[in-house]
Image 1 (tube, protein in one colour):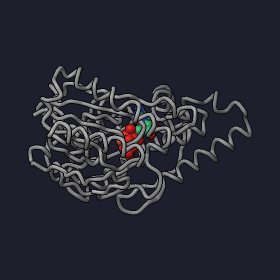
Image 2 (tube, helix red, strand yellow):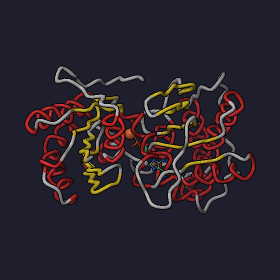
Image 3 (cartoon, helix red, strand yellow):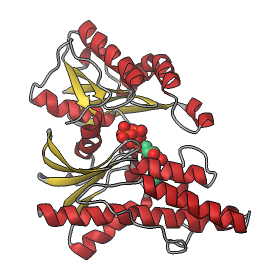
Image 4 (spheres, helix red, strand yellow):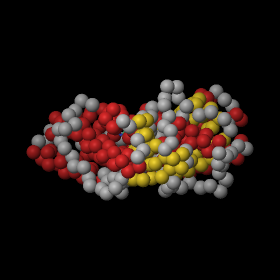
Length: 335
Ligand code: ATP
Ligand code: FE
């Protein structure tokens, strides 16, 4: 089975070819144009997707060293994401499927982030069902009970900002360029995580809230720079380490609660923020400390990519769960 995956939900145009779940190619064109605006500009994103999609798909097929006639099915991101961006991938996937006369498979982007754990890799353990997925990305923060490939239930989620936004907005406050998450991670490695304590927001059940967190970082920085204009420059590493430590603590507190509530102690992390070294180390620690069995994805499958779309497509292909041509992109796509 050869699956071509297409991802265009946000600001990365991506295509990948999988053969029986193994990656033959995985191409991502990241749009640099948004950096100068400090965030993704939807109109510019859809334009860039239009420019990138043909070369990216060509490259994915060429790298895979197959002919497009070998492809068994086209899997594409239907949502959630930016409407203009999703439309580019959706329309292209439809026409390609029609042109090649092969099945079309719609994929939920958030399910795909989780299913990235099932990409065939040497020396990589896959979770078994049921497991809990902590999905942490630029637009989402969810705890998902995963009972089967497409039998997933959101048991906790953010009531406001996503954890990726908490990283990126905090980074912006301390003057780091967009997206600041990876930079906070980088500086945090050499800082003192206990230097500046940030409060743990009180949210009931398994839900999260990050808008107050960002505000507490803002007030703290404003207060300190009033006393010492060089406060940020002098304490950058400690500030980053403290922000990261506090965010990771919020995530881990809820995960512990979810494990207690469900009795499931197999934990997989997914989404862009799962690249973060703080959360990775916290999970490795939890294996020893609480006897959890944790699954940490390879870096290339954390942020947006098309291999995760293709693996989701692979499992839908096995179930012959195909889409018809009336299917449309869905900016808010819950599962
Ligand atoms: P969604 O999947 O919810 O639609 P998205 O696709 O835009 O959102 P991803 O590409 O999955 O999000 O993740 C991007 C986010 O991950 C950004 O907020 C970025 O700052 C964050 N991120 C990436 N690497 C790290 C890291 N090492 N530490 C912290 N955050 C990180
Ligand atoms: Fe994503």
